[in-house]
Length: 207
Image (cartoon, rainbow, N blue to C red; front, side):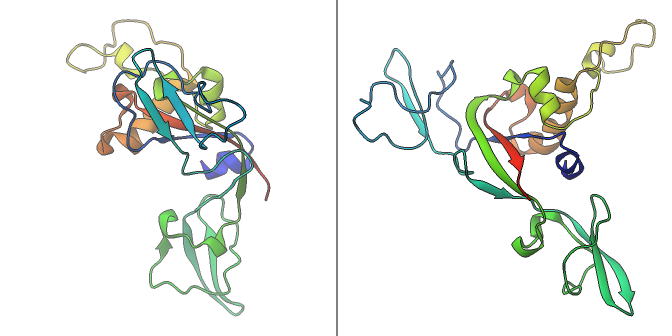
């Protein structure tokens, strides 16, 4: 995904809304509750109100359009040289701006990347809320994934590959994104089949 950002292929990201909205929400959220007069200051965030009076308010923890995000990356130790210890970003091998290697490990996972070693800053250009399965082919492509086939379409009921079907479904970016989504979120209880509500962030790199 870091390489996709650097290459300009990734301009969107999706994150699970926690806690999830209550059951009964069937439409996308509006930026402000429609019943709040324009002359009054509305709380920042997304609101929804259906015909039964059910309401839900959520404020994006990632910020609004214009907010900045910084990207964490995995960093690995290259080795000691006459110039000092060298380290590089694992995504593409670019040397980091670290003056040395202060960690007692050969690799620093992205989750532990300090702010000072982040080389990518993103500006949020749009925020919306939707179900993860509402993603379109164009949006899935903007997530930076490769096209894949829907594996369940080419397997028998017992899950084994059906080599005699003679048909392999068209590959799609949505299928590729569904696989990535499951790899990151199934164990957390938010798999693709659960179809959770998500924050959709569109962004552009500014550094």
